[in-house]
Amino acid sequence: MKLRYLGIDWFLVIFLLPVLSAGLITMKSFTESSPYFSHQLIWIGVSFVVFFILSYIDFRFLKRTDVLVIIFGIFSSLLLLLFIFGHISNGAQSWFSLGGFSFQPSDMMKLVVILMLAKYFSRRHVEIDNFKHIFISGIYAFIPFLLVFLQPDFGSAIIIFFIWIGMTLVSGISRKYFLIIAGIGIIVFICLWSFVFQPYQKNRIINFIRPMTDIHKTGYNVYQSTIAVGSGQLVGKGVGFGTQSRLKFLPEYQTDFIFAAFVEEWGFIGAMILLLLFGLIIWRILHISLLGSTNFEILYGLGFSIYLVSHFMVNIGMNIGIMPVTGITLPFMSYGGSHLLTEFIGLGILMGMNRYSRVAHKDDMRNEFLGI
Image 1 (cartoon, rainbow, N blue to C red):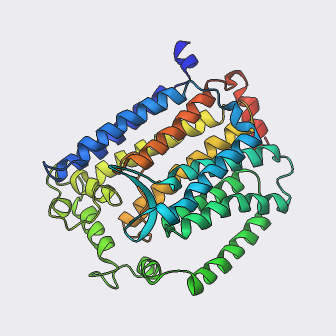
Image 2 (spheres, rainbow, N blue to C red):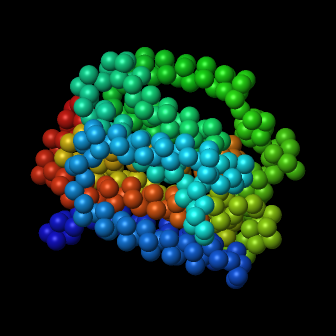
């Protein structure tokens, strides 16, 4: 009873721990003098503290439109301020640098978009088949999408787009509207390609279609990543024996390509265990979501699942050479405090909502949402 009162899903925590450990072990194996392990360990501790604090908060206040509008305005303003005070890293002006600490507002903005869309769709669930609601929700997502894209941070912009598409679909959009959205998306992409995309962004997309065209320049990262993944074979080379990462052939092996570094050392079996753990994490989030007291909590949980799945798919896809390199991190594994803290804030909000979920009526809520 007490575990239920705390609102913590301990199965979710249990599934998270080996994923976090996998990231730490992989960072530790790079080099003995690497600071990544110790820094990430600190961020994990901070993230868990925030997670448990948030689990005690009653988040029903987030259903208030004025609260969400203020939060949306604050983070939109932060994204605008990046163009003036932002720190440029890898060609993108996406970070506020405060001494030894860096903060990326686009990470938290993804959660804000999820909350905004959950609020909007929960009030209009019955009449969602009206196209105007698809259009209005698209405006909510387009504002942060544009601000992030112009940094330019193509990867985070794509995640915001996936969140909008995914939450629109689970909210009950008809197929004809989805086809209309897909058509609009194709037109927008053509316009972006013709007038907006920078040469390096075009090269990444071309390299996605033909990844081995230029393995010494635009295709180098993907080429080295696929070598690392393939060389792991069935059981891997062993911890500390991943030559691609240790010899610095594999770039960004602590962030963007940590999956490739992990698979090189743990092999196909390790990759399957990791994917299983990711699947169990999503399962627990979906399970908690369907216990939500209203459609707002349900939609938030589904939106957060879409957020994590989008990160999983894009990151792992670019590690194995089937998606373009976009700088997207692997949740709970990649080095970095900003994205890790955001992920645990998202989970903390979910746990806070779990404290007042209607367990006794879970079948009724599931049937209400799914229309059974």
